[in-house]
Length: 422
Image (cartoon, rainbow, N blue to C red; front, side):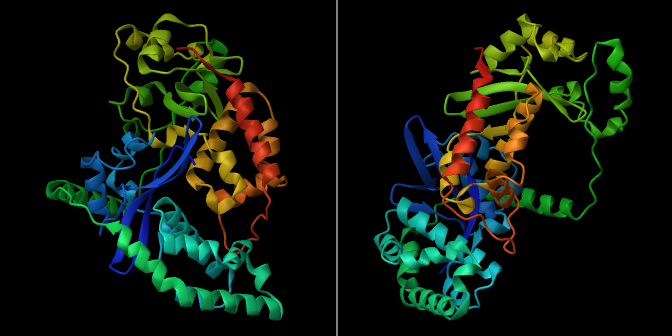
């Protein structure tokens, strides 16, 4: 992957433990993958509150150089609660392999085997790597139920179950040996516990609907349409948030060419970027972006009535760019992950990347992205299955060279229209 860090839950001998996983990401020509830990130790905490506290207070671990580390340190505590699909009952794998090979069983088993294989590779656990390298029939689990139909299929499933039953204790012992629980600041744990309790309580309450405000055009012809969109209750808007007030979002983009900061808004459903004629202007620093906004009006956002407020704030150097997690887009490494199949691709990273590519293509007035991602195409089917996983659906089957090639072409086209201005 690239550009994201995922909270995960591991069911091991000592119980359920929580840690962070950074799927593959690229730095220049180098590719990395890591877990929260230091040198030979994989750090795992007994609760989400302790994981949150550790992340917020520790800067001596293997993830500190990850491009998303500063972001993960600032997220709300409930954002480090693992999603269901990142909760792995590793101790229960033999029992799972003893069940009938139903789609949901295969999906859960595949996920558990995959995360163990990755831990084994990253942490260089010989018993784990020997187990996977010496037993290629485990790969049959990734293809779905088709491999386990009929007498031969049943026999294959039984062989896999026996193989796991015989060797899994050694695998778990290797994982238990590498897992370490680090010390955590007690005060930080208490703060995180309160945040998690508040978030859980808020989930039980009905949240008010929110309607985004579209910025107004200076153009008289567009004022009536834009004004009609201002139907939300003013109490729903955070008056202290400058960017909410002007209806524009700062966004951050990571590509193989580097990191870019820019702006985007929506006029109805239509995306509008800081740029001109489909070309998006990206900036390497907040200072460069602020200087550009103060000195330039020759771009598409200048048509907004609220841009005068942006330019005035830029003139006095009062702009701050607090980019929300949902506005951080990491494009590096997705093409490589696609080659390894849907379960190797980080769902949220891909979903956000599709949003960015689609918005940028709509802004440029081209249809290539929508056409390539239609569910009737191989890449579109792959993306839809990855973003909306369903064990009852037939998974896309490899090889995925064509899908990866099309994806890289879309990213390359996007990068051609992303111009660094400072």
